[in-house]
Length: 116
Length: 109
Image (cartoon, rainbow over all chains, first blue to last red; front, side, top):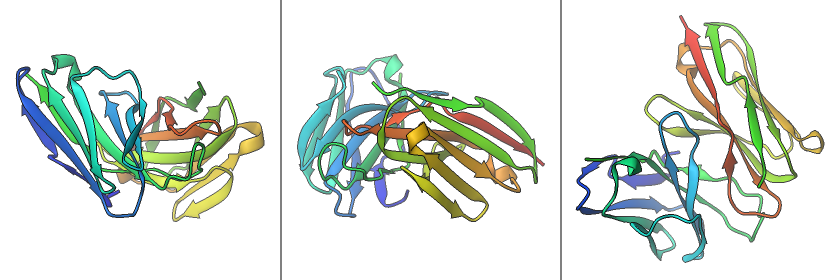
C-alpha cells in the first residue's frame, strides 16, 4: 500500500539514542495505527489515533512515544530502546466512523529497526 | 478478545497449482482483510471482505460471516505468490485488527 509512506525504511540505533519513525498519508483518513512485527509473527497493534487523539495504547512501554501532529502525520519517538525492540514497525490508516466502523486499513511498507 | 485461526500454517506448491487458505474466527466481525506479506516485508492488501465473494485476477475470496470463516483461493500459482498470507479481523465491538498467525506459502518453479 504505497498510499501510506513510512520513513526511514531501515534504522539502526544504539540503546542510548533517540530517533523517530514517521508515517504520512493523504487519503483523508482520520484513524492511524502503529503495529510492531517480529520475525515469523503477525503484526501486533501498539497504538491507535482517531481524530489526532490517542484512543488505544496496548500497554506499550514508555520508551515508545507516539505523536499525531495533524491528520496526515503520525510519528513514533524512540528512546532508550532494548535489543528485543528490534522489529518491523508498520503504520496503517483508515477512515474512522466510530467503534466497529467497518473500514479497511491501509499499511505502509514499514521501518525495519535494529537496536545494537 | 477475538481468536483468529489460519490453516494450513505452511503450504508448498508447484507452479501452476491451485490452493485454498482458510481463516476461522471466534466472534462477529465488522471487517475482514486478507494480506500478502512479501519477502521484503511489504504487507499488501488483497481483499477487504467482511462478507460475500470477491475476485481479483487469479485470486478470489469468500467470507461466510454467519459461520465465521473466510477462504482465499489462489489459482494457477506463480513463484511471485510466495510469502505469508494473513487474515485479519475487526470485531464488531472494537476498533483494532487482530491478525491470524498466517500461512507461509512457497511456490516452486
